[in-house]
Image (cartoon, rainbow, N blue to C red; front, side):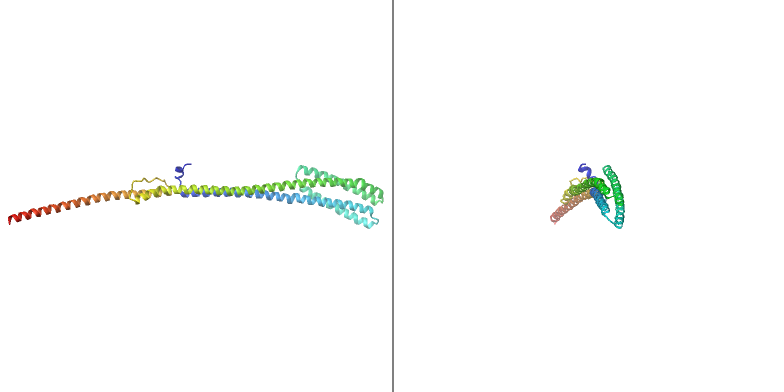
Length: 305
């Protein structure tokens, strides 16, 4: 768009357009920043509500399984019914605890890989609990040799499988946590770069638009100031540019009226000056004729005398 085309728009319109552009740029930058902040918050919520919680549940389950195994060993070593009853009561509580943790853990498993590991761990735990019941049955029947053999050959081996699966779960949680943290860091870096870049862009855009607007207004003002100075010096020859319906155009139209008035006044002054010179010339001629007449009359009177 050329300066001539822009000159057809009023200063009010230009300022409104400039302000609208800047507001849109600021709004776009704000929307993008809010979007990135929401992404960062989402990643933090994922770390808190999924991966951190999952890690805590894994720790609770591993602790409960170790306590379960220790309680079964204590049952084998117990030598009185009262102690055995207390241990069995604790075992029931620990089994309930593991079931609760498994339910809580299942609710936060979303990916297919996590579900596969979880399902495998649940099956191994069921085998582990069944092996524990076999050891307890042998212990209740006072068959300690069978109980120790089942404890060593079956329960401990299944417990090792539990540990391996729980360690695998830990690795999955660690990978998920690292991925979520990386996404949050990437979103944070992008948000910083975007905000800084947006501020630089808006600053440069504001400067460019401000310079352009000042030059445009200055150019329009200069187009009417030059004829005004000439008019003040008495020169009515400079042409006045047309500015349309803009503020500059209205000032130019007013200046054109002033010019027309000055031209008409100058023409009137010329006519008035010519009439004044004619009257002066007639007065002088009459005075000369009167003096000649008086001189001739005086000569005649003298001759007659």
